[in-house]
Image (cartoon, rainbow, N blue to C red):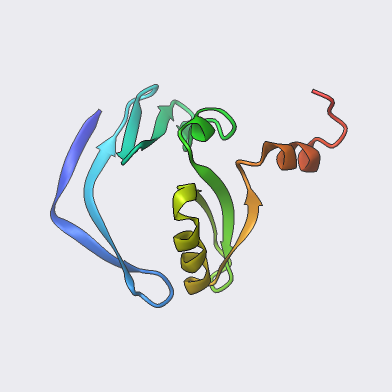
Length: 126
């Protein structure tokens, strides 16, 4: 693994109203089968590099759920782009305001495996 701190920090204005800022502080280069864990208060989140690409999240109904995240597939009404959001349930009202301000909608609750199973595998009894 190689970590390169960004100096100076890059600042991006984001969102359709350009009211939010993102601060790019480092670049991380992973070798195959390496993982990085990000921490935020009592929650954590992993990304794992494979030879074919990345596991962008831990398993939706396993470790991600255990870590306390909710996951959503969302779409911007303005740009027609799709995003995956991981949301701390204690911040749900803040998240809903963000979606409204950015004119985004939730397409699918990825953490809801009963919904996923019934939608994509309706005849599967396992």
